[in-house]
Image (tube, rainbow, N blue to C red; front, side):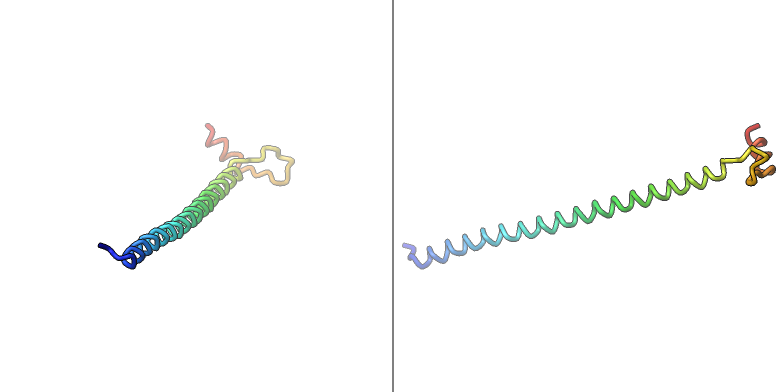
Length: 89
């Protein structure tokens, strides 16, 4: 026969283990969710930096590609115009 004291200790240990498991799982899940959010933020920042860099490269390339062909314009550069004609030929 098992005494009532042993049963109380047994069920108390079982209940304590279940509560501890629930609490531990909850803290691990919260930590995992926090890590996922930080990873998403880092990934978004990296993509934004790459997009800014690509835009900057595109803008730098566009500045070189625009040649003013109007000789009356004060920014007119004959050498750039001739170089552009040589490239297109």
